[in-house]
Length: 265
Image (tube, rainbow, N blue to C red):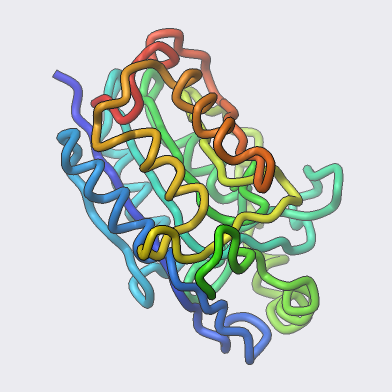
């Protein structure tokens, strides 16, 4: 019988000392995103955990993902959700056409897309990985309004952070096997395309990211029936005018995973 592990990350603020010294990255709905995804995971039989606020550090997040890779085998699934700011820094490994790495802004620093790729390569062949990323720039990763605050690190903050933390990020990937193959199947449902904005706000009295709010609406407390393509299609139809989401895959294709109902263990 397949087993499922889920990790839900949500940050409504970050430690400014780990960025440019002043930016707190204040949001209203990212922690609620993690709580709501945690509830969905529990309802579907996942062994679910949360990393919220100050607990969502680079070490705790990477260790949680790596620990899952030591447990999960072919046929098992990891569900990983992130609610928070997306960022960009200078490409530190030379593999980006736009010379920028996309990141998740964790409490004590950026988590690079290159680092996530290396984590995916630690999973066994046949493992399913589902990533739900409600952040800006998430296609590769406060006020009451239909569309609220962008979940993007401002560019001036990104540049100041790079200047302040440059040596740390330049040395981050030293010795890493960036060419290691991903044998699992990684499905990413992201709030926006690379370089595009995702929005935070209060929807129907509840703080959420616009993407998570729409995902919950389509999921309909588990009453949705259909596969990932139809699920994403309905989410897209409700969002694309303001914020087109993305659905992408890396690793080994898995037709069985494609045809499953979302969040199926």
